[in-house]
Amino acid sequence: ALLVWVVVLLLFRYISLASILSALLTLLDAIYLLPAVAYLPVLLICILLIIRHHSNIRRLIAGVEPQLNKSNIIKKLNH
Image (cartoon, rainbow, N blue to C red; front, side, top):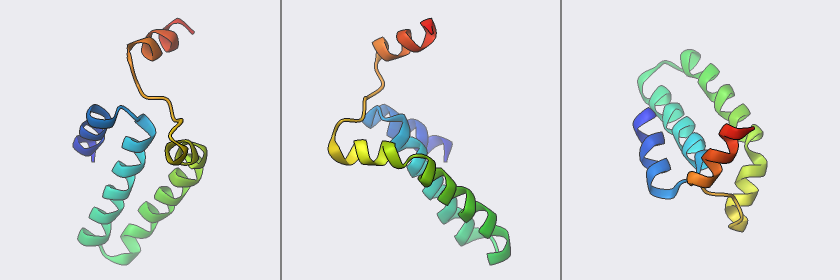
């Protein structure tokens, strides 16, 4: 999941997209590798993450989600 997060971030520069796709990949891994009782907590965490990122998802769909760039990093470090 970490590798997916890094690759998605490098390719698209959206932290929220990288986080959501990594969570979904983790869920798919858990479903494939674990018994149902073990992957249910992962499912709940994934659902919570998607709920938490609902505004980011809307901005991604609308094409207005800010991308990660050097100026964004500098602004965050200064605050």
